[in-house]
Image (cartoon, rainbow, N blue to C red; front, side, top):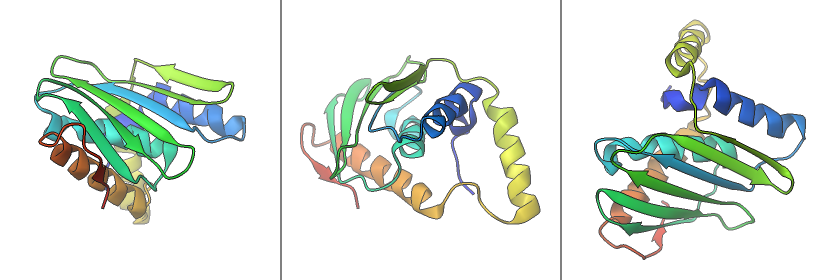
Length: 158
């Protein structure tokens, strides 16, 4: 099991539940985040993007520099995601499909909720996060880090 604790923030879970209740999947997501450096902290944003949009990302485009950058995750269908990073930024997320939209700039109980999931994992041996999502998150991150040196270029998600 591998996960960013942000996946389990109360507000993020409420966002996901809203889409489930409306029987629609988000088509667009936007995340914001910060931290010491993009290669280390971007994983948290990509965790939220994949948790909302699912797998199938095709390309990543990055613009900016090591301290402030933005990017786009392209999918071959109607889904897309944007991300922005600032060394002093805080985490936030937005998702939408048609008239259904949700956003949060607060992430409550992330570690408490993650610990519950970790304990469930130890008890059952079954990860609450599909392996394909974990691999997708790592692949998007790798493409984005590569994109930092080739700004404005479409980097394939492998």
